[in-house]
Length: 132
Image (cartoon, rainbow, N blue to C red; front, side):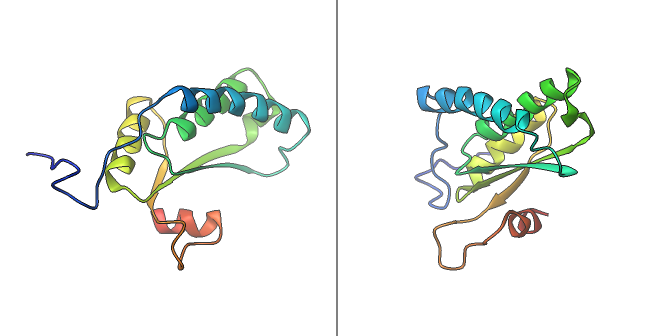
């Protein structure tokens, strides 16, 4: 099967590459998680990660990976369920995210949505519902 290129398939364009800005955000994410979790913010039974404009899913996958390391190290997060939702307007990007998640043994819910549209969802619960 031939997969159409972005120019042949207007609803699917290029998927954002993983560049220096993506890597810088991953490093910032790590520091933010540690600060957030060390301030006792683990009262919920579910920890949710929302990756908006996900592209390849690098932020959602990095977050899941970091949380997995913390759980395995005995952090109190070990008893908390972790969910990741990746949102993008580009269906091809979501397929990249799903592929990368499977490749890394992770589960990510993907949702195709234009969050700038007038009828955009207003909560992560709506996004998760749209992805199921």
